Length: 252
Image (cartoon, rainbow, N blue to C red; front, side):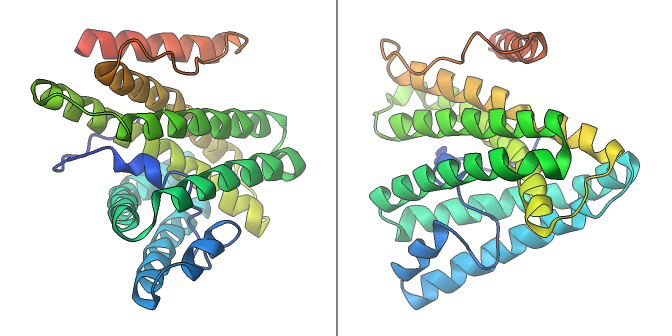
Protein backbone atom coordinates (compact mmCIF):
# COMPACT_ATOMS: atom_id res chain seq x y z
CA UNK A 1 0.00 0.00 0.00
CA UNK A 2 1.03 3.58 -0.46
CA UNK A 3 3.41 5.24 2.00
CA UNK A 4 2.06 7.72 4.52
CA UNK A 5 2.80 11.28 3.44
CA UNK A 6 2.83 13.96 6.12
CA UNK A 7 1.69 17.34 4.85
CA UNK A 8 -0.78 20.08 5.84
CA UNK A 9 -4.21 19.27 4.44
CA UNK A 10 -7.12 21.65 3.95
CA UNK A 11 -9.69 20.12 1.61
CA UNK A 12 -10.06 17.07 -0.63
CA UNK A 13 -9.56 19.07 -3.81
CA UNK A 14 -7.52 16.26 -5.38
CA UNK A 15 -10.82 14.78 -6.56
CA UNK A 16 -11.15 17.71 -8.94
CA UNK A 17 -8.10 16.72 -10.97
CA UNK A 18 -8.00 12.94 -10.57
CA UNK A 19 -9.29 12.83 -14.16
CA UNK A 20 -6.48 14.92 -15.67
CA UNK A 21 -4.14 13.14 -18.03
CA UNK A 22 -0.50 13.36 -16.95
CA UNK A 23 0.96 14.48 -20.25
CA UNK A 24 3.15 17.39 -21.19
CA UNK A 25 1.05 17.87 -24.31
CA UNK A 26 -2.18 17.80 -22.26
CA UNK A 27 -4.02 15.78 -24.93
CA UNK A 28 -7.62 14.79 -25.47
CA UNK A 29 -10.15 16.53 -23.21
CA UNK A 30 -7.47 18.55 -21.45
CA UNK A 31 -6.59 20.46 -24.60
CA UNK A 32 -9.90 22.25 -24.28
CA UNK A 33 -8.88 23.39 -20.83
CA UNK A 34 -5.75 25.21 -21.92
CA UNK A 35 -7.71 27.17 -24.54
CA UNK A 36 -9.91 28.56 -21.76
CA UNK A 37 -7.04 29.65 -19.50
CA UNK A 38 -4.75 32.62 -19.59
CA UNK A 39 -1.34 32.08 -21.17
CA UNK A 40 0.33 32.05 -17.76
CA UNK A 41 -2.14 29.60 -16.23
CA UNK A 42 -1.92 27.34 -19.28
CA UNK A 43 1.88 27.30 -19.03
CA UNK A 44 1.67 26.36 -15.36
CA UNK A 45 -0.73 23.51 -16.07
CA UNK A 46 1.50 22.19 -18.85
CA UNK A 47 4.58 22.47 -16.64
CA UNK A 48 3.04 20.48 -13.80
CA UNK A 49 1.71 17.92 -16.28
CA UNK A 50 5.19 17.57 -17.73
CA UNK A 51 6.57 16.85 -14.27
CA UNK A 52 3.92 14.17 -13.71
CA UNK A 53 4.70 12.55 -17.04
CA UNK A 54 8.45 12.49 -16.39
CA UNK A 55 7.95 10.83 -13.00
CA UNK A 56 5.77 8.13 -14.55
CA UNK A 57 8.25 7.51 -17.37
CA UNK A 58 11.02 6.93 -14.84
CA UNK A 59 9.00 4.12 -13.30
CA UNK A 60 7.68 2.23 -16.33
CA UNK A 61 11.12 1.67 -17.79
CA UNK A 62 12.08 -0.65 -14.90
CA UNK A 63 12.23 -4.38 -15.56
CA UNK A 64 12.27 -5.99 -12.11
CA UNK A 65 10.09 -5.66 -9.03
CA UNK A 66 13.03 -4.41 -6.97
CA UNK A 67 13.95 -1.74 -9.52
CA UNK A 68 10.36 -0.57 -9.90
CA UNK A 69 9.79 -0.44 -6.14
CA UNK A 70 12.95 1.56 -5.56
CA UNK A 71 12.10 4.06 -8.30
CA UNK A 72 8.48 4.31 -7.15
CA UNK A 73 9.57 5.04 -3.58
CA UNK A 74 11.79 7.79 -4.95
CA UNK A 75 9.34 9.50 -7.31
CA UNK A 76 5.93 9.01 -5.71
CA UNK A 77 6.29 11.74 -3.05
CA UNK A 78 7.11 14.16 -5.89
CA UNK A 79 4.17 12.87 -7.93
CA UNK A 80 1.90 13.33 -4.91
CA UNK A 81 2.99 16.93 -4.41
CA UNK A 82 2.67 17.68 -8.12
CA UNK A 83 -0.90 16.36 -8.14
CA UNK A 84 -1.75 18.58 -5.19
CA UNK A 85 -0.12 21.55 -6.90
CA UNK A 86 -2.26 20.86 -9.96
CA UNK A 87 -5.40 20.57 -7.84
CA UNK A 88 -4.66 23.86 -6.08
CA UNK A 89 -4.05 25.61 -9.40
CA UNK A 90 -7.19 24.14 -10.95
CA UNK A 91 -9.35 25.25 -8.02
CA UNK A 92 -8.19 28.83 -8.65
CA UNK A 93 -8.16 29.18 -12.44
CA UNK A 94 -10.57 26.55 -13.84
CA UNK A 95 -14.38 26.98 -13.65
CA UNK A 96 -16.15 24.12 -11.88
CA UNK A 97 -18.30 23.28 -14.91
CA UNK A 98 -15.17 22.94 -17.05
CA UNK A 99 -13.61 20.56 -14.54
CA UNK A 100 -16.76 18.46 -14.49
CA UNK A 101 -16.94 18.27 -18.28
CA UNK A 102 -13.26 17.34 -18.50
CA UNK A 103 -13.75 14.65 -15.87
CA UNK A 104 -16.61 13.06 -17.78
CA UNK A 105 -14.69 13.19 -21.06
CA UNK A 106 -11.56 11.74 -19.48
CA UNK A 107 -13.33 8.75 -17.99
CA UNK A 108 -15.28 8.03 -21.17
CA UNK A 109 -12.19 8.24 -23.37
CA UNK A 110 -10.01 6.25 -20.98
CA UNK A 111 -12.60 3.49 -20.65
CA UNK A 112 -12.79 3.29 -24.46
CA UNK A 113 -8.98 3.21 -24.78
CA UNK A 114 -8.75 0.41 -22.22
CA UNK A 115 -11.41 -1.66 -23.96
CA UNK A 116 -9.86 -1.14 -27.39
CA UNK A 117 -6.13 -1.36 -26.68
CA UNK A 118 -5.33 -2.71 -23.20
CA UNK A 119 -5.90 -6.37 -24.08
CA UNK A 120 -3.32 -6.28 -26.87
CA UNK A 121 -0.92 -4.23 -24.75
CA UNK A 122 -1.08 -6.06 -21.41
CA UNK A 123 -3.35 -9.10 -21.52
CA UNK A 124 -6.75 -9.82 -20.02
CA UNK A 125 -5.86 -9.55 -16.32
CA UNK A 126 -4.45 -6.04 -16.52
CA UNK A 127 -7.14 -4.95 -19.01
CA UNK A 128 -9.89 -6.03 -16.62
CA UNK A 129 -8.25 -4.33 -13.64
CA UNK A 130 -7.74 -1.16 -15.69
CA UNK A 131 -11.40 -0.96 -16.68
CA UNK A 132 -12.49 -1.65 -13.12
CA UNK A 133 -10.12 0.99 -11.72
CA UNK A 134 -11.27 3.69 -14.13
CA UNK A 135 -14.90 2.86 -13.28
CA UNK A 136 -14.16 3.05 -9.55
CA UNK A 137 -12.34 6.38 -9.91
CA UNK A 138 -15.30 7.73 -11.88
CA UNK A 139 -17.65 6.83 -9.03
CA UNK A 140 -15.18 8.28 -6.52
CA UNK A 141 -14.94 11.51 -8.49
CA UNK A 142 -18.74 11.74 -8.40
CA UNK A 143 -18.63 11.41 -4.61
CA UNK A 144 -16.03 14.19 -4.42
CA UNK A 145 -18.32 16.54 -6.35
CA UNK A 146 -21.07 15.87 -3.83
CA UNK A 147 -18.65 16.41 -0.93
CA UNK A 148 -17.48 19.82 -2.15
CA UNK A 149 -21.09 20.97 -2.55
CA UNK A 150 -22.05 20.22 1.06
CA UNK A 151 -21.24 22.25 4.19
CA UNK A 152 -19.21 20.74 7.01
CA UNK A 153 -19.93 21.58 10.67
CA UNK A 154 -16.94 22.98 12.56
CA UNK A 155 -16.96 20.15 15.09
CA UNK A 156 -16.41 17.59 12.31
CA UNK A 157 -13.44 19.27 10.64
CA UNK A 158 -10.84 17.23 12.51
CA UNK A 159 -12.51 13.96 11.53
CA UNK A 160 -12.84 15.18 7.96
CA UNK A 161 -9.13 16.00 7.73
CA UNK A 162 -8.30 12.42 8.67
CA UNK A 163 -10.65 11.08 6.00
CA UNK A 164 -9.24 13.55 3.48
CA UNK A 165 -5.68 12.42 4.11
CA UNK A 166 -6.63 8.77 3.68
CA UNK A 167 -8.56 9.53 0.52
CA UNK A 168 -5.86 11.71 -0.99
CA UNK A 169 -3.07 9.19 -0.46
CA UNK A 170 -4.98 6.20 -1.83
CA UNK A 171 -6.51 8.09 -4.76
CA UNK A 172 -3.16 9.47 -5.93
CA UNK A 173 -1.45 6.10 -5.32
CA UNK A 174 -4.01 4.42 -7.58
CA UNK A 175 -3.74 7.21 -10.16
CA UNK A 176 0.06 6.87 -10.28
CA UNK A 177 -0.24 3.22 -11.29
CA UNK A 178 -3.03 4.02 -13.71
CA UNK A 179 -0.77 6.60 -15.34
CA UNK A 180 1.99 4.01 -15.61
CA UNK A 181 -0.26 1.78 -17.68
CA UNK A 182 -1.82 4.57 -19.74
CA UNK A 183 1.61 5.94 -20.64
CA UNK A 184 2.96 2.47 -21.45
CA UNK A 185 -0.08 1.82 -23.64
CA UNK A 186 0.34 5.19 -25.38
CA UNK A 187 4.04 4.56 -26.07
CA UNK A 188 3.51 0.85 -26.83
CA UNK A 189 6.00 -0.15 -24.17
CA UNK A 190 5.77 -3.49 -22.36
CA UNK A 191 5.17 -3.79 -18.64
CA UNK A 192 7.48 -6.55 -17.45
CA UNK A 193 5.91 -9.45 -15.51
CA UNK A 194 7.45 -8.63 -12.13
CA UNK A 195 6.37 -5.01 -12.46
CA UNK A 196 2.87 -5.81 -13.66
CA UNK A 197 1.99 -7.51 -10.36
CA UNK A 198 2.99 -4.38 -8.44
CA UNK A 199 1.06 -2.15 -10.81
CA UNK A 200 -2.10 -4.26 -10.50
CA UNK A 201 -1.81 -4.11 -6.71
CA UNK A 202 -1.39 -0.33 -6.91
CA UNK A 203 -4.53 0.03 -9.02
CA UNK A 204 -6.55 -1.68 -6.30
CA UNK A 205 -6.02 1.31 -4.01
CA UNK A 206 -8.92 2.88 -5.94
CA UNK A 207 -11.23 0.72 -3.81
CA UNK A 208 -9.79 2.26 -0.64
CA UNK A 209 -10.12 5.75 -2.12
CA UNK A 210 -13.81 5.09 -2.80
CA UNK A 211 -14.27 3.94 0.80
CA UNK A 212 -12.61 7.08 2.22
CA UNK A 213 -14.71 9.31 -0.05
CA UNK A 214 -17.90 7.45 0.87
CA UNK A 215 -17.14 8.08 4.54
CA UNK A 216 -16.45 11.75 3.81
CA UNK A 217 -19.87 12.10 2.21
CA UNK A 218 -21.56 10.25 5.06
CA UNK A 219 -19.89 12.64 7.51
CA UNK A 220 -21.62 15.56 5.82
CA UNK A 221 -24.98 14.03 5.09
CA UNK A 222 -25.56 10.47 6.32
CA UNK A 223 -28.99 10.27 4.70
CA UNK A 224 -27.60 10.71 1.13
CA UNK A 225 -27.68 7.48 -0.82
CA UNK A 226 -24.56 7.43 -2.99
CA UNK A 227 -23.68 4.99 -5.74
CA UNK A 228 -22.69 1.68 -4.22
CA UNK A 229 -19.94 -0.63 -5.36
CA UNK A 230 -21.48 -3.53 -7.33
CA UNK A 231 -21.78 -6.90 -5.61
CA UNK A 232 -20.77 -8.83 -8.72
CA UNK A 233 -17.04 -8.28 -8.15
CA UNK A 234 -14.88 -11.35 -8.00
CA UNK A 235 -13.97 -12.72 -4.56
CA UNK A 236 -10.59 -10.95 -4.45
CA UNK A 237 -12.02 -7.49 -5.12
CA UNK A 238 -14.85 -8.13 -2.67
CA UNK A 239 -12.27 -9.10 -0.04
CA UNK A 240 -10.30 -5.93 -0.76
CA UNK A 241 -13.36 -3.75 -0.16
CA UNK A 242 -14.23 -5.63 3.03
CA UNK A 243 -10.66 -5.29 4.27
CA UNK A 244 -10.54 -1.59 3.47
CA UNK A 245 -13.83 -0.95 5.23
CA UNK A 246 -12.74 -2.99 8.25
CA UNK A 247 -9.41 -1.17 8.50
CA UNK A 248 -11.05 2.24 8.30
CA UNK A 249 -13.64 1.34 10.92
CA UNK A 250 -10.93 -0.01 13.25
CA UNK A 251 -8.84 3.13 12.87
CA UNK A 252 -11.84 5.29 13.62
